[in-house]
Image (tube, rainbow, N blue to C red):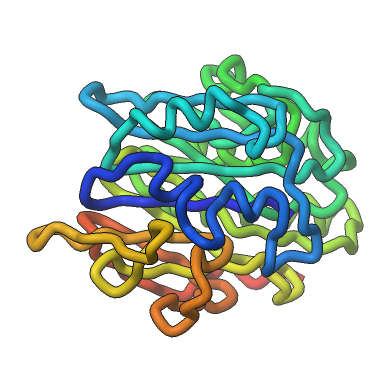
Length: 276
């Protein structure tokens, strides 16, 4: 399974999250702790927001720990909103277009998990993507397909509803096709101002997900991070960045997180109707 982190809050250098913590994302690429797959070396990506409305994205197929350009960029770039992801491929090619985060307009999306039997329903899901969006889809992953389904279903107006409808459509396609493999996901999306994250599975075995506030936890090599008095910095992660479990909140199954200006709202996630 992949590993990812999402950050919003006081401007911070990328390397303060990617390289410096005890259990940084780069360390997780080699030695993930909360995953049955410990090595995530099938590419990586970072996305961040600067002075312009659309985010910057840097992705490559090399292992994150072996990319000198990533380290150089991370030492110089500062941002209030960061998405970063290391990939363990689940049946699709190791290619730059398949690396997360995926971008559309102001939006970034990244995902950990798998749509069971995706190869059997990929065509059906693709046909549901709005024609004007389909040409923006570059890769072959279930993750990017899910993202563009969510955009089709209104993610730009209501991120939570767009995600819910996309998940419900994919789950119904699995059931109608007779797929018994599980649908498991921990995903997040942002427009640079707000972040929505989702933990869901059809068998209650979702990938792990945690969050923590900047004024409650530390993330640098010395486990120290300062948050602005007026803005509470927040991290959403696949696994804690340090060994202090007490200041991380474990996200329960079937939960949706909404984050804006460091404030978190957690609610239960339900599909539109019960699915068999």
